Image (cartoon, rainbow, N blue to C red; front, side):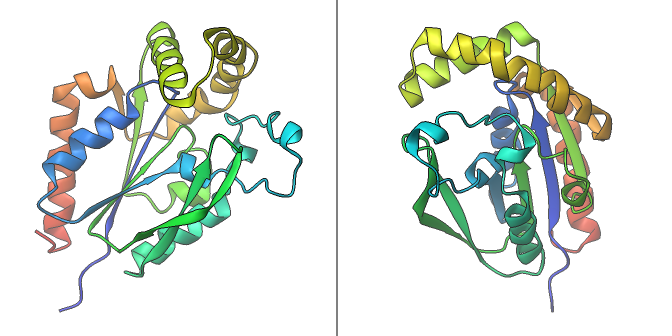
Length: 212
Protein backbone atom coordinates (compact mmCIF):
# COMPACT_ATOMS: atom_id res chain seq x y z
CA UNK A 1 0.00 0.00 0.00
CA UNK A 2 1.30 3.43 -0.91
CA UNK A 3 2.42 5.49 2.05
CA UNK A 4 0.70 8.74 2.91
CA UNK A 5 2.24 12.19 2.66
CA UNK A 6 5.16 12.71 5.08
CA UNK A 7 4.72 15.09 8.01
CA UNK A 8 6.71 18.34 7.67
CA UNK A 9 7.75 20.21 10.83
CA UNK A 10 9.33 23.65 10.63
CA UNK A 11 11.51 24.74 13.56
CA UNK A 12 12.60 28.38 13.48
CA UNK A 13 14.19 30.80 15.95
CA UNK A 14 17.17 33.06 16.37
CA UNK A 15 20.78 31.94 16.25
CA UNK A 16 21.57 30.13 19.50
CA UNK A 17 17.92 29.85 20.51
CA UNK A 18 17.99 26.08 20.97
CA UNK A 19 16.42 25.00 17.66
CA UNK A 20 18.87 22.14 17.36
CA UNK A 21 18.08 20.88 20.87
CA UNK A 22 14.36 20.86 20.08
CA UNK A 23 15.07 19.11 16.76
CA UNK A 24 17.15 16.42 18.50
CA UNK A 25 14.50 15.93 21.20
CA UNK A 26 11.79 15.33 18.61
CA UNK A 27 14.10 13.20 16.46
CA UNK A 28 15.01 10.96 19.41
CA UNK A 29 11.37 10.19 20.14
CA UNK A 30 10.67 9.11 16.57
CA UNK A 31 13.98 7.39 15.84
CA UNK A 32 12.22 4.04 15.53
CA UNK A 33 10.27 5.59 12.65
CA UNK A 34 11.89 7.27 9.67
CA UNK A 35 12.90 10.88 10.32
CA UNK A 36 15.11 13.23 8.31
CA UNK A 37 16.43 16.62 9.39
CA UNK A 38 16.97 19.25 6.71
CA UNK A 39 19.06 22.14 8.05
CA UNK A 40 18.44 25.47 6.34
CA UNK A 41 22.08 26.53 6.74
CA UNK A 42 23.11 23.73 4.38
CA UNK A 43 21.27 25.74 1.73
CA UNK A 44 23.33 28.91 1.67
CA UNK A 45 23.82 30.06 -1.90
CA UNK A 46 26.80 28.92 -3.95
CA UNK A 47 29.32 31.78 -4.10
CA UNK A 48 32.05 30.16 -6.17
CA UNK A 49 31.64 32.87 -8.81
CA UNK A 50 32.74 35.53 -6.30
CA UNK A 51 36.24 36.44 -5.18
CA UNK A 52 37.06 35.28 -1.64
CA UNK A 53 37.09 38.85 -0.27
CA UNK A 54 33.60 39.34 -1.64
CA UNK A 55 32.39 36.13 -0.01
CA UNK A 56 33.60 37.41 3.36
CA UNK A 57 31.01 40.18 3.12
CA UNK A 58 28.10 37.73 2.99
CA UNK A 59 25.30 38.47 5.43
CA UNK A 60 24.35 34.95 6.52
CA UNK A 61 21.40 36.19 8.58
CA UNK A 62 19.59 37.77 5.62
CA UNK A 63 16.92 35.85 3.68
CA UNK A 64 18.79 36.50 0.42
CA UNK A 65 21.74 34.40 1.64
CA UNK A 66 19.71 31.21 1.24
CA UNK A 67 18.95 29.23 -1.90
CA UNK A 68 15.33 28.90 -0.85
CA UNK A 69 14.21 27.76 -4.31
CA UNK A 70 16.48 24.72 -4.02
CA UNK A 71 15.30 24.02 -0.48
CA UNK A 72 11.66 24.14 -1.56
CA UNK A 73 12.41 21.91 -4.53
CA UNK A 74 14.13 19.34 -2.31
CA UNK A 75 11.31 19.32 0.23
CA UNK A 76 8.78 18.78 -2.53
CA UNK A 77 10.82 15.85 -3.83
CA UNK A 78 10.88 14.31 -0.35
CA UNK A 79 7.12 14.81 -0.12
CA UNK A 80 6.85 12.86 -3.37
CA UNK A 81 8.88 10.08 -1.73
CA UNK A 82 11.88 10.81 -3.94
CA UNK A 83 15.51 11.04 -2.73
CA UNK A 84 17.57 14.23 -2.83
CA UNK A 85 21.22 15.28 -2.73
CA UNK A 86 21.42 17.74 0.16
CA UNK A 87 24.07 20.40 -0.45
CA UNK A 88 26.98 20.96 1.93
CA UNK A 89 28.30 24.42 2.77
CA UNK A 90 32.01 25.07 3.32
CA UNK A 91 32.28 27.80 5.96
CA UNK A 92 36.05 28.04 5.53
CA UNK A 93 35.71 28.92 1.84
CA UNK A 94 32.35 30.70 2.25
CA UNK A 95 30.74 28.82 -0.61
CA UNK A 96 28.98 25.58 -1.38
CA UNK A 97 31.08 22.44 -1.28
CA UNK A 98 31.30 20.02 -4.19
CA UNK A 99 30.10 17.32 -1.81
CA UNK A 100 26.46 16.43 -1.21
CA UNK A 101 24.63 14.19 1.26
CA UNK A 102 22.24 11.59 -0.11
CA UNK A 103 18.87 11.76 1.66
CA UNK A 104 16.15 9.17 1.17
CA UNK A 105 12.48 10.07 1.71
CA UNK A 106 11.18 9.57 5.26
CA UNK A 107 7.89 9.71 7.14
CA UNK A 108 8.83 12.81 9.16
CA UNK A 109 10.73 15.78 7.70
CA UNK A 110 12.12 18.36 10.13
CA UNK A 111 13.14 21.70 8.60
CA UNK A 112 15.37 23.60 11.00
CA UNK A 113 16.80 27.08 10.57
CA UNK A 114 16.64 30.73 11.53
CA UNK A 115 14.36 31.68 8.64
CA UNK A 116 12.41 28.55 7.72
CA UNK A 117 9.17 30.42 8.48
CA UNK A 118 10.08 33.45 6.38
CA UNK A 119 9.06 32.30 2.89
CA UNK A 120 5.31 31.65 2.48
CA UNK A 121 6.03 28.94 -0.12
CA UNK A 122 7.99 26.98 2.47
CA UNK A 123 5.41 27.54 5.20
CA UNK A 124 2.71 26.11 2.95
CA UNK A 125 4.56 22.79 2.90
CA UNK A 126 4.60 22.50 6.71
CA UNK A 127 2.11 20.65 8.86
CA UNK A 128 3.46 22.13 12.10
CA UNK A 129 5.36 25.40 12.54
CA UNK A 130 7.44 26.02 15.68
CA UNK A 131 9.35 29.07 16.88
CA UNK A 132 11.95 28.60 19.61
CA UNK A 133 12.01 31.79 21.67
CA UNK A 134 15.07 32.39 23.87
CA UNK A 135 16.43 35.53 25.55
CA UNK A 136 19.00 37.47 23.54
CA UNK A 137 21.73 37.27 26.19
CA UNK A 138 21.63 33.47 26.18
CA UNK A 139 21.56 33.35 22.38
CA UNK A 140 24.67 35.50 21.99
CA UNK A 141 26.61 33.42 24.55
CA UNK A 142 25.75 30.24 22.64
CA UNK A 143 26.72 31.86 19.34
CA UNK A 144 30.07 33.04 20.70
CA UNK A 145 30.90 29.56 21.99
CA UNK A 146 29.84 27.90 18.73
CA UNK A 147 31.71 30.27 16.40
CA UNK A 148 34.91 30.15 18.46
CA UNK A 149 34.93 26.39 19.04
CA UNK A 150 33.47 25.15 15.76
CA UNK A 151 34.33 27.84 13.21
CA UNK A 152 37.66 29.15 14.46
CA UNK A 153 36.47 32.74 14.95
CA UNK A 154 37.83 35.23 17.49
CA UNK A 155 35.58 36.59 20.23
CA UNK A 156 35.98 40.15 18.95
CA UNK A 157 34.88 39.20 15.44
CA UNK A 158 31.85 37.28 16.72
CA UNK A 159 30.72 40.17 18.93
CA UNK A 160 31.27 42.72 16.17
CA UNK A 161 29.25 40.60 13.74
CA UNK A 162 26.49 40.13 16.31
CA UNK A 163 26.10 43.86 16.91
CA UNK A 164 26.39 44.93 13.28
CA UNK A 165 24.56 42.10 11.51
CA UNK A 166 23.05 39.32 13.64
CA UNK A 167 21.04 41.46 16.06
CA UNK A 168 19.54 43.84 13.45
CA UNK A 169 18.75 40.92 11.10
CA UNK A 170 17.08 39.06 13.96
CA UNK A 171 14.89 42.04 14.76
CA UNK A 172 14.07 42.75 11.11
CA UNK A 173 13.54 39.27 9.67
CA UNK A 174 13.59 36.45 12.24
CA UNK A 175 11.58 37.76 15.19
CA UNK A 176 8.62 38.79 12.97
CA UNK A 177 8.21 35.20 11.72
CA UNK A 178 7.11 34.24 15.23
CA UNK A 179 3.59 35.24 14.24
CA UNK A 180 3.45 32.39 11.72
CA UNK A 181 4.22 29.73 14.34
CA UNK A 182 1.57 27.31 15.53
CA UNK A 183 3.50 26.89 18.78
CA UNK A 184 6.12 29.12 20.42
CA UNK A 185 8.56 27.21 22.62
CA UNK A 186 10.32 29.31 25.29
CA UNK A 187 13.78 28.16 26.40
CA UNK A 188 14.28 25.62 23.62
CA UNK A 189 15.18 22.05 24.47
CA UNK A 190 14.77 22.70 28.21
CA UNK A 191 11.01 23.07 27.78
CA UNK A 192 9.99 19.45 28.20
CA UNK A 193 6.27 20.23 28.44
CA UNK A 194 6.19 21.97 25.06
CA UNK A 195 8.21 19.19 23.46
CA UNK A 196 5.87 16.54 24.91
CA UNK A 197 2.90 18.42 23.44
CA UNK A 198 4.66 18.53 20.07
CA UNK A 199 5.40 14.82 20.17
CA UNK A 200 1.74 14.06 20.91
CA UNK A 201 0.62 16.23 17.99
CA UNK A 202 3.09 14.61 15.59
CA UNK A 203 1.96 11.13 16.65
CA UNK A 204 -1.64 12.12 15.99
CA UNK A 205 -0.80 13.26 12.47
CA UNK A 206 1.21 10.11 11.80
CA UNK A 207 -1.63 7.93 13.01
CA UNK A 208 -4.08 9.86 10.85
CA UNK A 209 -1.79 9.26 7.88
CA UNK A 210 -1.65 5.56 8.80
CA UNK A 211 2.12 5.65 9.15
CA UNK A 212 2.30 4.42 12.77
